[in-house]
Structure formats: structure tokens, C-alpha cells
Image (cartoon, rainbow, N blue to C red; front, side, top):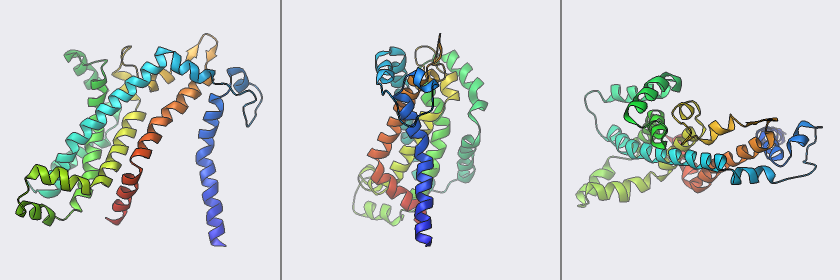
Length: 268
């Protein structure tokens, strides 16, 4: 009896989660007239014109390219900084290590709006405003502490005897780190990559403030989808569907490491 009830609750929860996504796809396949007309579960006359507008209009596909550029830069920079930092925190004790670790986490706790004005003035002064690197570096303020926090927990779970064995076997530190230590922590890297990518992909406030006409991201374009006849609901829904695709692809490519990493997190 309890098993059947649990299954029904799980099915109901899945429907609750998938219903907004289905309705988004359904709207993307409708015209504006049909969306504003009578309610219907299925599109009466499915159309691909909304998606065609996305792929044919440079405003849309350039915005996608801009978003993917700074998100990729942010993820790469965050992992490049967080991996050695997390290793140091997990293996060494030094003066002020706990305070430094706590300071990193306080940056993650602060809302992005706090840093809008400093970033805007700094990037305008040094010529970084309206570039993908500007948004990527701004996001690093939040993704690097998160990445260090996640990786440090995983790295601390690897026995230090492994480091000593590699040293006794005559391996260099770089060989041990890249050929032994990081492969062992593939699950941790998958979890970290996922969270860094998703934060940078969905963040709007910093991306909107630090971008201009040249590097306008997709999230900003979606908030300005207004034509002379009003809101273009169909095109906006099609853009929403396409913005979900990168996240799905990231989860698909790191799915094995992601599941392994979350499992390790539960054990620790």
C-alpha cells in the first residue's frame, strides 16, 4: 500500500515538474493568435516559424553565441582557479586558512546587486565593459567560491597516503596530480562543472548590466521581446525552449560523473 502511494506521489511530482516545460514547448509551436485564443492542450496548427525566427534573426543567434561564450569562459576560469585552491585547502594547513576559506564563502553569500556598481565602473575604466570576459570574470566572484567549497570536500575524502605513495614511487607532482588525483575525482569535477555552468547560464543581473549592444546575452534579449503589435509570445517560448537545451546537454555529457559525484557527496 505504501509502495503504491509513493509511486503515485512520485508520478504526480514528475507531472508537476514537466508540465511547465511541456507548456513552453506547446507555446513555441503555436502562433500568437492561437496562444491568445481559446485554451487547448495540444496546438491546433503546429508551426516551426517561431524557431525559424530564432535561427534567422542575428539578434537571437548572436545572443545565444554571446551567452555560450561567457558561460564557457566562466566555467573554464572557475575550474582552473578552484582545482588548485581546493587541493591546497584539503592538503595543507597554514596561517589564516580557515579565515580565507570563510571569506571565499562570504562572497558567494552576497547578492550580485552589491557588486554591480564596482564592476561597472572598473570595467568601464579599463575597457572591459561589453565583452564576454567582463561577465565571465564577474561571475567568477560567485562560482569560484562555490567550486572551491564543493571540490575541497571531495578532495579531503581522498587519503593523503595516496600522495605519499606516488612520491615514494618516484612520480612528479604534476604526473600524480593530472594522471592519478584528478581522474579519481572525476565525479567531483562533474558536479562542480554542472553548478558553475548553470549559475552563469541563468544569472541575469550582472549579465544585463555589464553587457551592451555587442555582447547582449540571450537572457537580456528574452526580456525585451516586444514588437509593435505587443509581446511576441511564440518567439519568446521558442527561445525559452532553446535555452534549456545547453543545460540538458551539459547534464548528458557529465551524467555518469555527476551521479557518481552526488553519491560520493552523500557518503561523505
